[in-house]
Length: 281
Image (cartoon, rainbow, N blue to C red):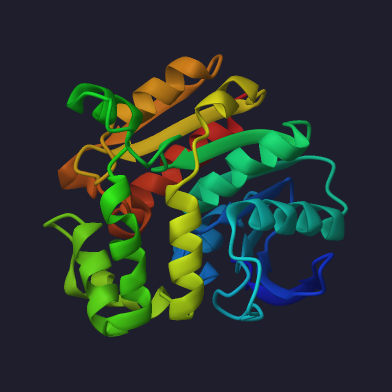
């Protein structure tokens, strides 16, 4: 089993970002969700590095990356990803992108296209999160729009005013199933590593994005993964699958950890699904 090494590079706006690298073979980049460090994918790094060169990014402001005062927008994170690919001299890479990490991919494709994407695995991130008040409840579920405009600032302002431990606990409880163990929840809490001001800006920016038109631009083999019990209605990933030519969909049932962090609750099953998809010619 390959031991992950800590490495660093600089973005084009001179921010020092950290990533973990392990294994050998085709390049596979793991992009954790907003607020979570690269360590959240530790079991994926260990398992998948037996088949790939795995690179797991600490986004700016996260984990061991530099916690600067600027750039907490998904578009800037997409450019950071472009800088990482340039640093790695990567013509092609597979991607496993979770939550806001998937939003980074949507934005990257919008800005730079799909040419450097080999296969893409999107984990539980709808194409639109902010509901239009004109939409019906059925439309909101179909698209995954779970946030209302009138409450978004109230939600994101909590990162500036509320107890960080309480916020983190609420997030983890809401995004795990009733089958999650105490140890798994504690692990997720330990992986949350972002300053409150950065989380407030980043989450607000991400919620306000609308990537429905980008789905038509995805020109790479794509697997969407979601959970039956996720906060994001699973139908939103069925909708995205229908927009992306040849895409596939995997829905984890609740008893299989089917909420936002199925890769922590059921890592063996998750790793098997991802490995099978990435190695299937």
